[in-house]
Length: 125
Image 1 (cartoon, rainbow, N blue to C red):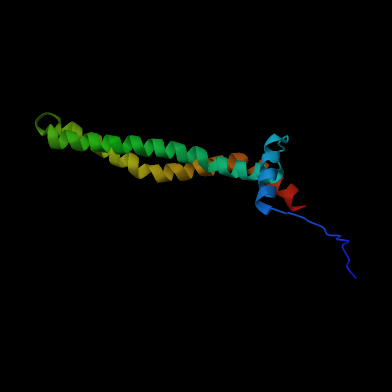
Image 2 (image 1 turned 90 degrees about the horizontal axis):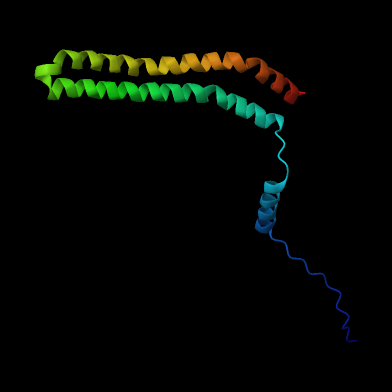
């Protein structure tokens, strides 16, 4: 018996291709901000302001310290005392950068705490 009746099923599946299709599709769907995303964004925002401010303060303080050192080492005849004062201001600024970061972060967390608590209560239910 020669059975030439070929009933076959052919299926091709490509996981990477399906993932790419999903990524492209998500670009064009309207974006809904879910609660977890809002929570992450709020939590990140508390340290963002403190980080930016303390980095700026630290950079300016280091530049002051460097300028004070230059005054003392290069122009010591004229700017020795002002160089020491400028250098000390730079050192004090650098030493205050981390406490400033902690203070601003704590203050921002206190501001955002009610919203964080509300979102976490909604997510935990």
